[in-house]
Length: 207
Image 1 (tube, rainbow, N blue to C red):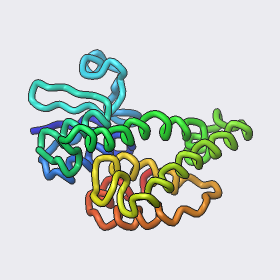
Image 2: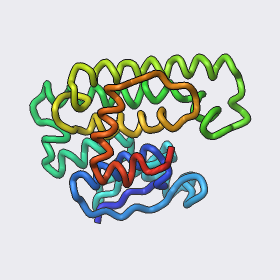
Image 3: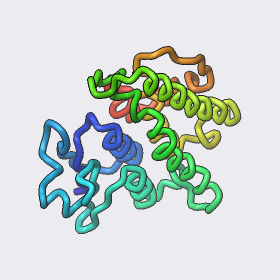
Image 4: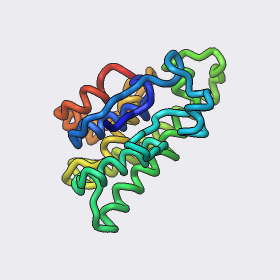
């Protein structure tokens, strides 16, 4: 059986679990990470030298990096609706996934531990204000894209771009600071909330 190593409180693990639920694949999830089984062991580092979750094990195939895992799962399941096979349509999904992993994620690096986790090491007001500005800038990009499509991130249908950005936007919504009005995002978020896998692994009370 497909195995996913990583704790369910991890946002990156949850995007993989959401994808598994969307494609209907059976899987076994094992808790690894802070508070659970250690990732800093020789055995785990042999699977992922970065000592980070998630890690996918599919028979003798091992894969790390959450967005790569999501793409692998969609392709293996033949789910061209989630990740198209046509090159330009595929690239359109993947470039939003890559942007989520780089620009969007980096925007919250200081704000999230400061305001959501209340980490005392993140207490610089200027860094917090700068981070909020950067995070809201990324949200503005998503808002503009959803205004153009009127439905989902890349168009009329749900794709992996909605999985990875859905979790990121959920984190933004749940982090306590003043948020701008984003009607297109709110309408999109309501559509995501109609999907049971999102309610199970996305908008489930976890940051």
